[in-house]
Picture 1: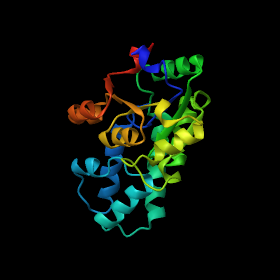
Picture 2 (picture 1 turned 120 degrees about the horizontal axis):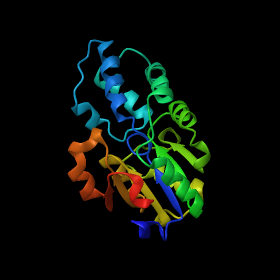
Picture 3 (picture 1 turned 120 degrees about the vertical axis):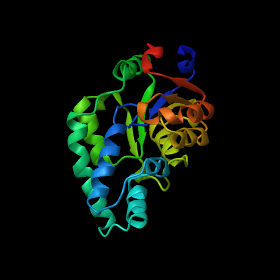
Picture 4 (picture 1 turned 135 degrees about the horizontal axis):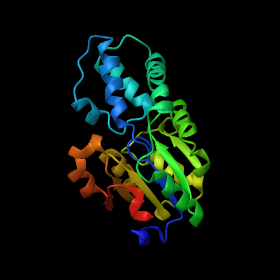
Length: 217
């Protein structure tokens, strides 16, 4: 695995399910939120919204579930429901912190490219005290299209001032893997309990698969 880093100038991480163990909480939030409007939750929902930006997801909820609230109100409710969990219940994925420090030691630039909302990302990074280990933090609200379009990864590479072909991406879901590949980047799939049923697809789409970041230490 070490040779995968030998010609990389930057490593870009998705956040939820990739760098932090947080995918579990979004099922809880979706169930609670939909119950407010008497709407049932289905596991198929997670696959449908996979990779969408925060705003795209809010639009989908409003249209598909006939939510009467505005897009901004929907997003605001989700932020309120998630921030405390990010602050107190979401840990780093195994060995992620050591890997970030190893990348810094090697002089490899680092970034986040997430579909999540900035306020929630800020709460997560500050709680885990890893902001100083990251050179850039990019959210899908800053680009035109969410994953699987390559926009967020191309944007992150531009902010890092690194050619996309010299970037390594880590992702936990197929839509994100497709986004990294479409950007012309090397993509590693990361194991996550939430996406265990997607593992064959993740392995097929990605350049390699890891259970955790210890393989790089």
